[in-house]
Amino acid sequence: MTKTLEEIKSRALDELRNLNDLNEIEAWRVGYLGRKGTVTQLLRGLSSLPIEERREAGAAANNLKSLLEQALAEKQESLRKAELDKLVQQSRLDVTLPGHHVQVGRLHPTTKILREACAVFVAMGFEVVEGPEVEWDYYNFEALNIPRNHPARDMWATLWIDYQNEAGERPMLLRTHTSPMQIRFMEKRQPPIRVVMPGKVYRHEATDATHESMFYQIEGLAVDKGISMAHLKGTLYEFARRLFGRDRKVRFRCDYFPFVEPGVDMAIDCFICQGKGCRVCGDEGWIEILGAGMVHPDVLRRVNYDPDVYTGFAFGMGLERIPMLKYGIDDIRLFYSNDLRFLEQF
Ligand code: PHE
Image (cartoon, rainbow, N blue to C red; front, side, top):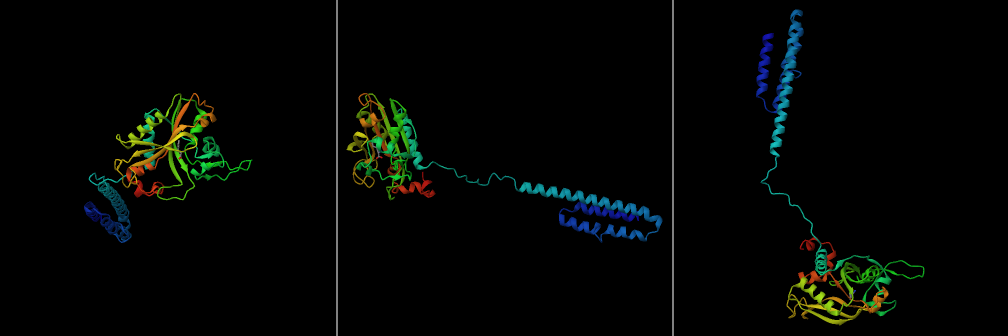
């Protein structure tokens, strides 16, 4: 009996040592320790032994059983570990694989031109200030010499806010230009003033390739003793050259805005055809880019500046116009329709 046990033991252990997958090991377990396995049979056979032998043989057989069970557990454990190691090996970082492409965001073309324009004025000593997009009639019109029922209001198709004051008036609107910021700024500060004020403006307009109901303007204002039209021209000339190229020419023509006197519009010579006439400038050779003028004395008086002491110039321009001209964008609606195919080009 003991001899049989020894034989079984060394055979089983030998076999087990050479196994190296979990299925084979399971077969081995069934073969030795399963319901009909060698060791199980052996234990069952004990009952046929004479009493005297049974005790000793039983202990030895049980010993063998637990020995094999332990060997099995160890083998399973080491195999599992080996398998895990293999998996880790296989999943190691392969530095030769191409990397994942990370999408980097970018600035909106309007943000870019806004920053570019502000930087030019900052370099000339202007500060940058922002203000409210929901505005009072007073700032948007009245304080700018555009009284109620004045035909000049027709220049700005206005979006009114549905709000009535005690007098039954509707004095609130979405600002139609950034010029109300001239008043707000002058109310708060005393000259000398050099400031640019960019931001969104709104118009009650049917949209088309050149009209949006929301777009950006940048407003400029300089007030001091002795500010003249020469300062206006010098400043805007420099701006045009920095944004559109050093050899730009500018042209000033008379224009009407109720809050400046005299009022002008400024054009640059077409940077595509150098003024000869082309599709971009509509065969004009000139491209109008902004409105400007000397701050009207009545506007200065309204903010308690003495027009005999102080004078100033102001200008306002649409921002989208600039990248449209620069990059040949033929529809302003592209800017705010969130089409990545458009936006990713900038
Ligand atoms: N606010 C004017 C407009 O929107 C432009 C302008 C600003 C003109 C400042 C003169 C001075 O058309």
